[in-house]
Image (cartoon, rainbow, N blue to C red):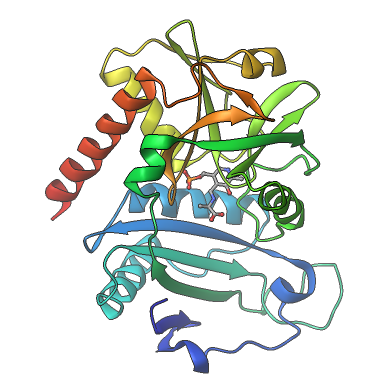
Amino acid sequence: MGDTVYLNGAFLPLAQATIPVLDRGFMFGDGVYEVIPVYNGQAFRLDEHIQRLQASLAAVRIRNPLTTVAWRAMLLQLIAENKALQDQSLYLQVTRGVAPRDQAFPPASVAPTVFAMSMTLQTPSTALVQSGVAAITALDIRWDRCNIKAISLLANVLLRQQAVDEAVAETIMLREGWLTEGSSTNVFVVAQDKLLAPPKSQHMLTGVTYDVILELAASHGIAHLVAPVSEAQLRSADEIWITSSTKEILAIISLDGQSVGQGQPGPLFQRMYALYQDFKNQYMRHTR
Ligand code: PDD
């Protein structure tokens, strides 16, 4: 955990960063967030994360308190302040601000609360990448606006704990017989040498990593199809992958106790993992 955080215009030690209990983030989970990986001091796909933040803010009608230029400057300074950390995972959140408790929006004069911090980025170990991980399935009990990166994450918390309780890495969700995503990841499936991905919809968060994977598939001639993935396709898949900013790409080798494919990370996973690492390294060199 980096010691210096950002709160409402100032950089300060974490221990001094406090907010009033009437903050609507605390009262209602009324806010949105982002998680941005930083490799070797370079924020990965920073503009895409700032764009998604803007889309989340617009969707919940919170005025964006900072310009794109100001977001960039603040986050770059936060990275610099915490440069003692090797790779970083930036967390930022914006809430609708502090006001007497009432579900209705507060007056426009109430300023959004802006908080950002940096943690050590812990990508999966080489051993985990090579072995793959297990997952379970569960009904998607969330709301109909999962495309908003909202801080109200109670359903995700319960779903993720289900995975922890069963000593597996992730809970993969199904809604009316269709794959949506993991509790904090997107999900890809490989069937008959083709990569399948559920399309963007209000039932899943469009991951920045999800977009990178599809771009890499397109630019390297990997057969892929963005279309709804049924429970039957998920259960009979040759490969299943989960993706996120912090997990990058991980292979699921067992689902609800059943082996996925050969029960080890498959050939397309190996290829995409290598492409992703190359892309990351190239990208970092370019933005230097
Ligand atoms: N989670 N779907 C959900 C529900 C998520 O929470 C996340 C990310 C993703 C992947 O998005 P991205 O590739 O942009 O990280 C998909 C973050 C890491 C989190 O909540 O910690």
